[in-house]
Length: 285
Image: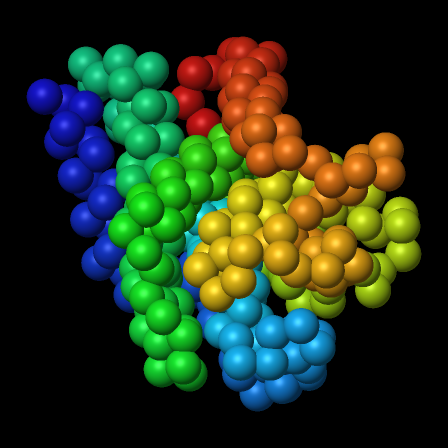
């Protein structure tokens, strides 16, 4: 009962604060505006050689897959802002002297963040699909839609774990605002959205491949772009250059490897977060 009340409180605080909702989607909005205003025509040319009729559909799906994945981490960052605000305003101390268990309170923040991340990412998916169809693409098939929603859930869980780890080391709203701005600025590069991974130096490519969320982007691209043209039918050079598949040891990674990376990252960051909290001798953020 207490967990449900806390969960409702966190959700209500997030969605009631329109500025927080807007800024948690600001990174997504910036990426979409850059694509619409500058990158769209340039990237479309990359697919015209082998898919002239579906080139726009392919590249719209490419960018929107990235946008959806990015929403999972930017909205998670915004949702965890509630915990940071509670800590800075000493509301956590009020909770701690109440009968609420610390584990219940901590879990409520994490679950609320995951719910917010999932809902907002699905909302971005809806707008992404509308945009794709407006420019001559097609709606996702039912099977592709289910796969995409499943990947959103996986991306949200992984992003929540990563942001949870970041939040354990933040004490004030100023520090949180700086971290959010930094994340919003870098996320497009860390996921290979602003610039195709093939245009980047090998060292930067390695950083992108290490960053967990980029693996969710790869999987979403394979599903969404596959609606326009099977990834297997695309030239290997294009597939590698645009980051539809990551290479390791001279060969393409299998989809299950990306899933393992996301699951492993979720576990690692969650355990690391608990370790940091235990060292601080506290069970709440």
